[in-house]
Image 1: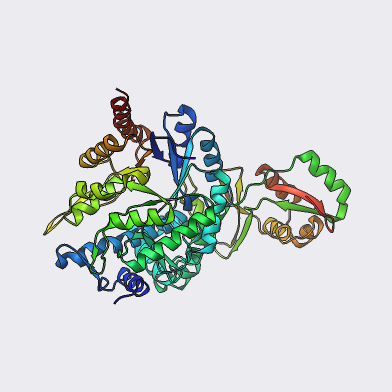
Image 2: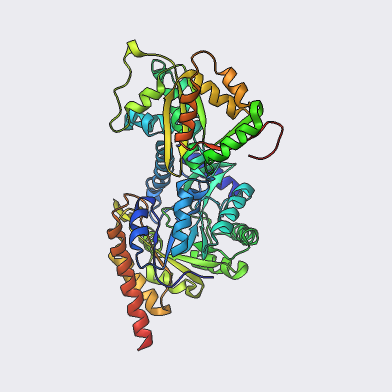
Length: 257
Length: 280
C-alpha cells in the first residue's frame, strides 16, 4: 500500500504536471483529474502571485502573461524552501539573467535586484535615528576613529545599467525611462525611512562607495577616503540624515553605538 | 485565554487606517502567521497597535501538520517568537499539508485519513502544543478529491486528534459545505458527527461554483460574501451550542471595510439572536 511519504511525493509530482496520485478518486472517478486541477491551479497561482508581490515592476515591464509564464519556470526550478513567502524569490534576478529571450533586456535582472532589496528593506528590523546632538558629541570624542552605524535596511546596489531610472519610470508620476543616449551605469540606494517608506534613489557612485564602506565596518575617515573622486561629503551626510538612516555611532575599537 | 464569542475579521493592512480611526465593534482580528515573520517595519507596527484594542487570533498556513516530513524546527521557532510577542487568544492551523522534501507548495493539500496519518498528525499536534506552550485549534479542510485508502471519516479523524492531543477544533462551516457538496454528501450529517463541544472558533467564507458533469463543484475562494446555505448551517450550529468566536474570512479581491463589517453584522445578528433566545 502507498505510504504517506510516497503519497506526498506522487501528489507533488502531480502538481508539477504528472497524473493525480493513484489513491486519488472522486464520487465520479472519471472526474478525478479535473478536480485535481484545483490543486495544480492553486499552487501555481499562489506562488506566481507571491512572486509578483516582490516584483511588481518586472511584472509591468514583461506584461502579466509573460510574467506568469516566467514565474512558472522559476517555481519549477526554485520552489520555496520556506513557508514564509516574503523570504522566497531572491534568485529571480539571476534566473532572469539566464533566460535566452531576455538577453537584450540587460537591465531586467538589475531591476529585479532593486525590487528584492526593497522587499528586504520593507521587512527589515526597526532602528531609531540618532539625535544630531548625540552624534556630534560622539564624533568629537572619536575623531579619526568615528564609526557610523546605519539603519538595518540600508543597501547599495552598483549596477551596469540605469536600472534605478528604469525602476523610477514605472512609478506613478515617474520621469520617462532613459533613452539610449542617456544609458549609463547607476548606483542605487535602497533603505527604509521610518516604518513604511522604502527609499529607492539613484546616487552618485562615490556616495554609493562611501555608504558601502560604512556598511562594511570602515571608519568615517576610511569610508571618505575610499569614496574616490567627486565625493561630496555634505550631500552624502544630508542623504543619510534626511532619511533617518544614521542609527548609531561609536569609536572604532570601542563598544556601543 | 480564549477569543470572545463575537464576530471577528481577518486583518487586511489596507483597512488599518479605518480600523484605527473608527475602532469598529468586533470581538477579534485574525492574522496569517506567515505574513508577520519579518523583523520589523509597518506590518509589526500595525499589529502592535491593533493588539492594544482587540483580541487576536494567529492562524498559521505553513506548518504542514498533515505532511510526512518532520515539522520544520525553524518555522516552529518563528511561530513561537510571534506568539510570545503578541500573546494571542488563539493559535490555529490546518488539517492539511504543504511541504514535501523541504519544498513548500503553499496550498492546503488534502491527506488520506488512515491509522498511519492519524498517528502522524497527533504527533505533530503534540509537538506544536508542546513547543508553543499553548493549546492549538485544528481546522477542517475544504477538499476536492477523495482517497480510496481513507478508512476513517473526517469527523471521526478530527474527534480522535482532539481526544488524544487535547487540541481544540476550528470549524470552517464553508469548508464543510464545499467538501460535502463536492463529494455529494450531506453537510447536516457531517455536522451531526462533528464534535461540536471542541469548537474554539468558527470560520465563515465565500466560495465559487463551477459545473462538472456529475453536478456542482465548489471552490473555497475566500473572495466573496458567505453563501446563504452556509449562513443557514452556521445558524443551526449556534442555536445548538450557543455563541462562538466567528471569523469572516475574505482574503482575495478584498472589498472596502464596510462590506466586511456588513458580513460581521450578519454573524452578530445570529450570535445575539441566540444569546437572547438562551436568556429568555
